[in-house]
Image 1: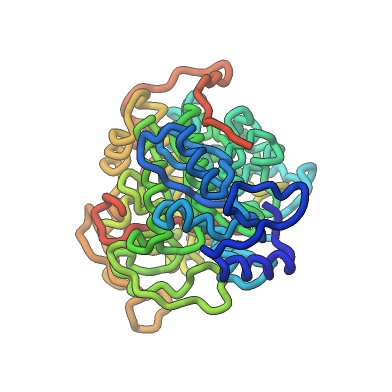
Image 2 (image 1 turned 45 degrees about the horizontal axis):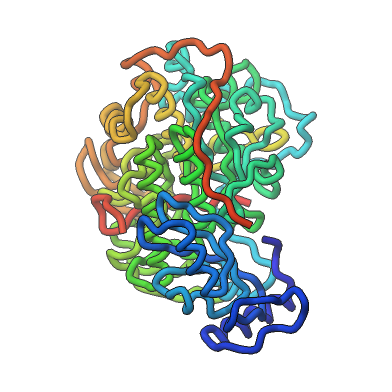
Length: 529
């Protein structure tokens, strides 16, 4: 949906004040509405949760009676994406069943043009012309790949092209020479209305290089040029869930998980948290809808054989006891301070069947920005940290692909795709394994990393964070550092592929708190714009 103009925002404010109050329908030939519906505008998008098993015609009827229009209904999880210009839609269908993250964000920001803060730390300017992509081999700058033995793993196998990774992010540049061999346009999709859109314009990047950078970490070609990904032999699909303002509304993510579940995607990478709240609280009425819809989508994807991997936040907090949330809703003029309890979590990483990833720097010490927490982190991987310089003087952030060239980013967003790449190698060498079996292998093969005896990155004499647990499982690193060589040293070596396989899978019906062993789950980094 395009940005609101100031006049539209003013209408939104009036509409929200009038929520639940009926008024006369607006005049005009195009304003034919069901009885009792009003159309002051603007049209808002909602997630609506129904009783499981609700048939589509019944869901449509309830939506129409409440003055809404169905955009898409995901029958397997009984969740719909709906639009309505009626400010009373949520109350009419039931406030415990409908929620507009879009409306909450617009109200909180109080401005018509707003961008979500970029949490990814960039350490390089980006090129924009595809024709200018340099051809120099940057492999010697990839300290992160050596840290997880990816270079050694490639001597055994680089992965199986039958394994497809869905990159739920801001889009993947289809023209980048390092990504062309891996990118599958037929499995790529845009989710920025909550409904799948397979046009290239819907899934290609527009304002953000984040998704292209993440995809390169996973599967950039091993061709002696540029960079090489963890699993250059697998395929990636661009599943765009980040809009041009940097927001990842829950309906975008639900669409992404459902697309993966119904299109043969084996693994998803999720380097974000759903907006507009960093911590979504199931004990709060509207946010309860988000919690339930996300849980259903992730659970369904998992049941269909999708392993989901996510980054923890860049908030540098203990996710098991964060205390207060002062950052949400994102970019509000003044953030409300609210206490965070056991009913609040960062989604989707806090979901029970999602592998949550923390970040380390070149010295294999928790990155200064990375969130943590005993039970909130499953494994760790390199994401870079300016406080930890590589011994050879290379950039402390992770180098990877960006539209038109290469860039260095630091963040948990960069750590997660390293784990996703290792999981793709595992899926290649252990064909037929379930997400639970692959997760068990990830944990078992990770190299334990002990809690640091002194975690004072700023040399202030005070500890920057406290690591709890023991060597084989702790709050900073979970089960430890993932290892690509271990992933390919057991199981079945994938057969050489002569071409990308086709995927015949059902599509969605289109129309015009968590079980992790923690009070509060981890999060994923917001994609940088």
